[in-house]
Amino acid sequence: MPEGDTVWLACRRLHAALAGRPLVRAELRVPSLATADLVGRTVLEVVSRGKHQLFRFDDGRTLHSHLRMDGTWRISHAGRPPRGGPPHELRALLANADQVAAGYRLPVLELLPTDEEDRGVGHLGPDLLGPDWDLDEAVRRLGADPGRAIGEALLDQRNLAGLGTFYRAEICFLQGIQPRRPVADVPNLRRLVDRARRLIMANRERPEQTSTGDLRSGARSYVYGRAGQPCRRCRTMIKSEEFGPDGQERLSYWCPTCQP
Ligand SMILES: [Zn+2]
Image: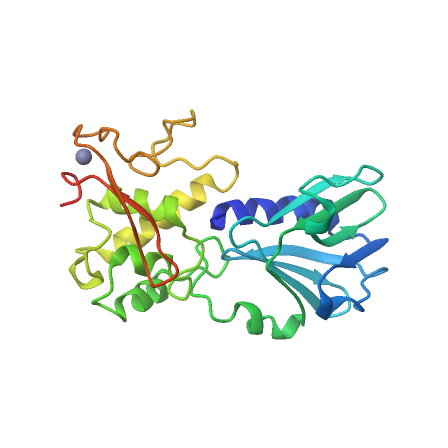
């Protein structure tokens, strides 16, 4: 699943392709939006909020989408067929005279009044990549459920928005915290959250995510995706397990020595 930095970068590219220009073609292929007409509307901006995308139009409406597991937006030049999957997986197509943005496999797609965007994203905690990032509020929300595992709390977008399994694994490693440790037992929650923000901010301008500073394939993480391989610090075998709320279990990675 794309994490906040990947969505942020996608929105920046969508903004560059679409903003400030009227749509000459607009198709929303979900039943509830079949009659929505966006042709002639100008895209004011495309912004991310956590892992959500918001396309704001000049008529006071916002198109809200979320990629979930395998959704994607692809940008291509007008006149070329969009590439992002078979045509029956296309859910949204927004085009101006030069550029086409095509959204595939979008499980969430809705039109909202821009001043009511909170109906789609109001449940989210502070956005790690947002202009209104609020460290104190994120720490407060995480601390509100002290018995919950830190690895689970970090993925709950109502606490703070943007983190996924890569950052969960890497931040817990960098702080020496086993992901199942209760929030109440994390010695410096504020430092952990601040580190998460600095890491995701550092990665947002590029498609690759790294916590090691190394961009080479296979060298970008300390523990994420490295189950059964030796820890880069202590050579202990990295472990992994699925955990999380029922139905939302996700793979977690840790070093048993560095993260006791
Ligand atoms: Zn280790």
